[in-house]
Image (cartoon, rainbow, N blue to C red; front, side):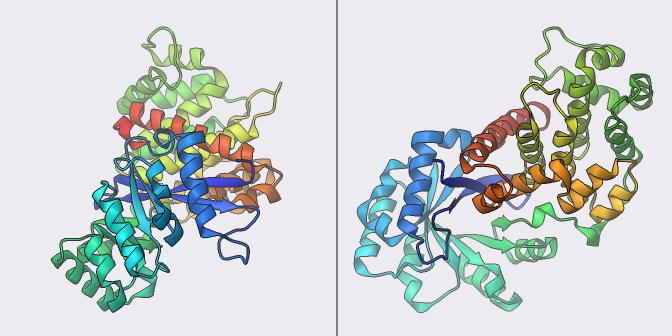
Length: 407
């Protein structure tokens, strides 16, 4: 597994809960689009590594995995290594609907595999595949507004579940949702919705103030206690977080002072940043999970044997979605926080060792092994850390913020 990265991209429902994940693949020997790229090898690598080496439960939890299917992979029936109750088979846009292919897709459907059409734009030749598919992934950038509406109306009349893919903005998401699309894919949720920009509430300002305070090397615990004690909801959130499985303390903690003393500086930094996540729990699951995964990846990649854990790695990963959490431009919201310049620049420009790990964490989301290698990390090490982060984030999210099935 040393030369590949398997990533995942969330697929959201109309309320921006996580419906499933598309598995992404990259190889340092032949990336997609290059002359040496073999789509069959790509699909096989995703399937085999997911099942045999990693395990779908660790990657997607109780959600479904969407896996690209090439013509050869379908004809040979290699998809059968994947459990039908856990995956959706995506027929790629360049697969021609010839008779042998249609027979193979029909067989997969009879075996219980849901069929999806990827990067879909309607064409007469695709009609036989449309009839077999349960889910159609409409390629949003390839259509204008009228085209998106026509596709939605036609496919809904035919009883299909329709997914709007490659969404880049909240405006695109809202348009497609209003047009009748059921599912949504893209990194729009990681961007601030500045059209609906709101003032940051006093409770959230206190959370952001706490995050800023604990970045100092010699922060004052009494000052932290004062900030928390002024807000009942903050006190409740702190105690809930400290008593969660995340910190695995032996005895329940019942007071702010006891919590701060037992945690210590490093764990307190992590606790406060997790508190911030709880304060934005109305945000999409995909965004909160992205923040947690990035934080864990940064923390693990920043660990140095024999050194005290540097809490700035974790914080940089978590704060990297601060613009989307607050619906404000990143430079603007960072300007209101007394963070060290090293932290701000790590988030804004990937500067320094903290920025370097953040850049790798972001690259993981697209299975971008080239970026990881260029920054001195092996694909094998990054993959190990990334899957650890996904598993950890699923446990933390379930324990603090919502159902454990989210992963």
